[in-house]
Length: 94
Image (cartoon, rainbow, N blue to C red; front, side, top):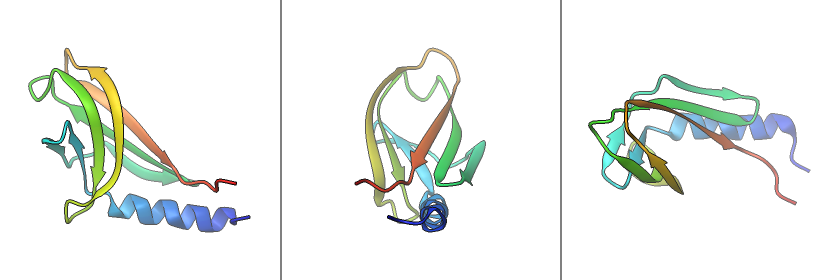
């Protein structure tokens, strides 16, 4: 079993690595309203301007060198400026 303290350290490391969100492979968002760790969960909150995209089909988290940390396939229609909250949970899988 992995200790909770180590899971929290991994979450902090992950939060520090995240430099930006890339929507649909092209739209970069590097300003976060919230970017923090709570226990072993990374929480990100960011604004998606309606002028940037009409729908979101993929959300990527990338580091400073543009390497992908995670990718999620989604469907989020955007009809007005939208605030998204995304979480990354670091946990042990048995």
